[in-house]
Structure formats: structure tokens, C-alpha cells
Image 1 (cartoon, rainbow, N blue to C red):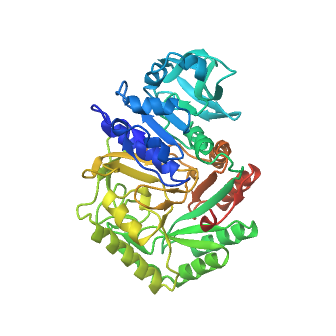
Image 2 (image 1 turned 135 degrees about the vertical axis):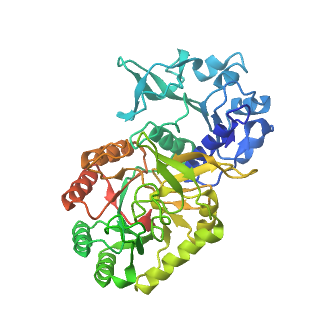
Image 3 (image 1 turned 90 degrees about the vertical axis):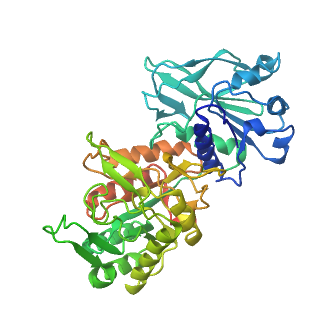
Length: 480
């Protein structure tokens, strides 16, 4: 995994290397290396090379360019500096059948791949490479970028050992984004004989001691009747630290004291459910973080606030953040679940998907598997202190082994949200189903969503039926 490290934007090179490396881990181990450190023959020890060109005109070692041109090792080249490769030899056009030209910065809102139209954030003005020449007898156009007038130009091409993607695919990603093209193209370089297969997951979210038991039972009975395995994100301690929902009087409810909820959880397990540890209280202290100080509303391992424009702002780790503090929350959660007579979860999920690098490395020693979207920080490739002021969020369409050492179970569709909030639009069943259909371009991809138990069961039915109709088979997380 080669990346740029020159100039003021070196930190972006590391971030993009982390994003690409996380995805590549689905296929095996990966080694990050600044491209400037490349020595002749280095790629001979690897099954493939991914180079992320994040810095315009970063000088590339001639040894790297020459080894690519030997055409012995599959190379996935992303974005910048392809012109250094094409200029290295006089016959590049004759050999590879394309000639990079200039970046198109006009609005591109779609990328067509395998006949599907994937979205692209139209305000992304970073540009996509175009070509002065392209010989269709020598080069395959893998995906097409669509301009606002409907015209197209190549988004990704392949010739011989070289796959070239004309932009960074990790910026402004969404559930239906062209990011999915890159996720699938890795199969061609790393596992080309992978057969087509499409599996689905559903997780029942934010199950705390105050949840209505009959709602849990109804969900379990429905999913069981459809032969749909599921997981249950359990919060064993409910805290309303400021009395937001109890007339100003702080309230704490332990799972062990709610026998009807415990009984409902055991019923869910008997119907194919598996517990996931979703923190301890899913809130932090006696403060809004950022909403109310109430379990399931707020962050637990991270500080946040809502700004004047109604955006949730990620502030940083909690004041007492440390490996021992994070593991203490985990042990408290285990103790509460045990006191309720429930099995110990083997899968962890961050409340609101956020925790520090210190927390993640510590919790990964307790749980080998996590079930959330990843949050990665400056310094993720080592060699320096964690920089929590810079972060990258990433979801995955298949199992990966991330930089913290976690095996990550995908959650890539989001959740049913009937009302908009904090500039997030409502997400209706049709939106989740459309996201699942977009993910069909990933040849061995997973469509994974979560659902809150207080919402109407009819919406869950619609989502499950729609995902099945799209061609997915629901499985247990452990079966991925």
C-alpha cells in the first residue's frame, strides 16, 4: 500500500492509505509504505500493489515506475501522478492504449458501473482524470463518469497489469456512492475468481432496559417467521442523568431489574438473535452529549455538541479517556449482562460509532470483532501520536480487518429514520432498499442495516422483503 507523504497534505495520504488498506484486508494482509521509500523489486514480494496518489506531482521513485512497467504485478493506481508513469516511456500509449490528459472539474453526479448508476457528491470539485487518447482494443473502460448534460467519460480503466481510477474514491462517500466501484475492483486485482454472492444482515438497535418487551417479541417473531437471523445491540444500563424524560429527576434503570425485558431478550435469542455489546450506558456523564444525557441519545466514548447551525460537532475524547477507562466500561457492561442472566456478547459496537484510537486499540484486545462503521484518526499508520483533530469515517461492504485489529462486520445501509435530524434527511424503507440494490455491484458484498425497536414493524417488514427481492439472503454475522 503505497502513499504520498510530501507537502502540507501528507496526512491525507495516510488517511487514504488506511481506507484502501482496510478494504484490501478483506483479501489478506497489507503493508503500508510511503511511495518515496520504494526500492527496486519491492513489489515482487506481494500479490498486488495499490498506490494512492493524493499529492499532485509528488516525485515518484524511478524504481517504482519501472517496476510497474515490467507488467508482472497487478497495480491499482488511484488519482494523481499517472502522468509520471506515462512519461517514463515513449511508447506508453502504444503499450497501454490510453493517455492521461487533464482533470475534469465540472459537476459529476453519477458513475455508471456494471449497468448501475451510483451516486457521486456533485459539489466534489477535486476533478476526475480525462484522456487525450484511448484505444478500446487495448484498454477496458470499467466505469463511466456522467456529466450534468448526460455525456460520459471514463472513471476507471484497465490495461495489462494496470487498473487506474481517475479520482480519490474515499471522499464524500455515501451508501450508494461510486466508492462501491473501488470496493469491487479490488476483487479483480486480489481475488478474481470470487463467485457472485449477496448476503444481508439486520441488527435491532439500542435495546436498553426501558424498551417495551412486546415490541422486542413482535420483532423476533416476525424475523423468525421469515427465517431471518438478526443481532441485538444491547445497552445494559439506562441512564437519564438530567431527568430529561422524567420531569427533571435523574433516573437509572438496570437491565437485571427489568425481568420482562430480560425475558423478551431471551425470547429473541431463542428465535435466532445474537447479542452485541453496545456500550454500557450509551451516554456520558450528567451533560448533553450532544442531546439530552440519556442512554441511546448520546455518545459514550466521545464528546460532542450541536452548533448554531444544527450540526453535530465531534469534539474529541472524553477527559478521562484511557485504555483502562474504556475497558472499565466494557467490564461494567459484561457484569450487568451477566447479572441479568444473559450470555456474554462476543461482538462490540460503539455507541454512535465513535471512540478514540486509544479506546479502539484497547477494546480490540477484549473483542476480536466489531459491528459498526470505522472512525480513524491522524497517526493511524503509526510513527507518531494519535491526532484526534483529524478523522476519517468509513463503512465497508464486506468483512475487513481494520487498523485497530478488529474484524469489522459491515453496516453499510444505515437505518430507517422516518424524520430528518441534524441535516440528515429521512431514510425511508425505499432508501434502504435502493442502497442495497446499489451494493449489488460488489460481487461478494453484504447489505447490512439496523432498526430501532420503537419504530413500526411494518417498516421492518418492507425493508426485509425489499432486500430479499433484490437478491440477498439474510445470514448471521458469524456466517460471513
